[in-house]
Length: 254
Image (cartoon, rainbow, N blue to C red; front, side):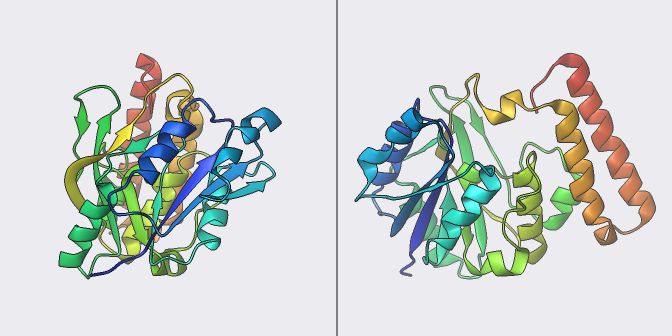
């Protein structure tokens, strides 16, 4: 099965790690057909840091509109059958795309897939699982949820599920992959093909817990018609809010 893959990297003042990120893409044993960096209004000196890739990678600059807008612009500039997302501070193992392509060759029904995540510089691995829409609706705070840097989506799913919602600035990944899961089960490859870097600038480590809670409430409320009953929906919202309150009390990351 011969598949084409585009890689979309949203970038914002990320010169600290971007070179390792890009290197991991260019080192793939199965090269991506297209690689796009979308500079989301970085400072001039930060924009200069990625100019070295001109001619090798498509670089697009836009006024700051947020990570969802950057991803949407990147997708719109590509034509490959599959789109893989990679955050500016994460990296991939050099066989990631070939492993996923091999999986897809044996699962032609697959429209979206994600993989296990390893913490950069450690042996810690986040194991995931295949995900259906019920996993998002009833286990909204599960650690098995999808990380963008560990996901790949078939292009036609964007037309069916809709693009990244630019109005959702926090928990935009939860919103997007929930809509993907409505259309198709998100398959899973149990190999740590993505290396997630934890540092003080991680968006996921600095977001306001209250805003994260509010946004998940809003996202789930948009899909309350998918719950078996209003009672089930309210029970899930209560459980979610209790979990966020616990995290806020103990100062845990989202």
